[in-house]
Image 1 (cartoon, one colour):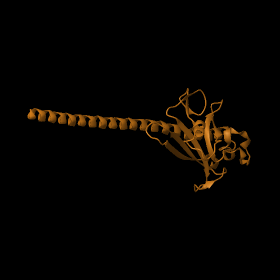
Image 2: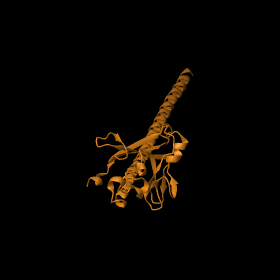
Image 3: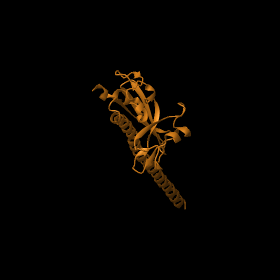
Length: 213
């Protein structure tokens, strides 16, 4: 009787050990799969965010190049004019220039990129709903990331902000009469892989090299 009891007790202990191993293995596999899924989501979202940020650099480059085309008679005063204002021609009035500020870019009725200066307080960031609503990115029918148009919201929630500043030849800060502009395209988003917002910044310097020809 005693031997039977010992055998049963041993069997129960062995079964509990096996069950513990199985539960531990299941938990470990779940963690591995969960972390792998998070990694896939992070990489996918980061690739899309990089595309969104790069498009902003290309859009601003297009603004400069369009100014060159529209105002070829005055490269010096018109390369950085805001929203293709023809009053820039042969004018030293810098009030028509693109200011050092933060912007979003939208497509106008002529399908040209135009700048809209931020109206937000500098203290706002991605954690603020007002910021996210102002800089929210959408996808139009031509698969262009935009702030306007016939649009579908992109998930996860991406925001895109363009920071513009002027540089001298030695890359120190200057005003709108400088021949160089530094552009920072900042994209932020949130997903279920982190409690904090993710961020990507791409920086590029554009110059008015046509004015030197």
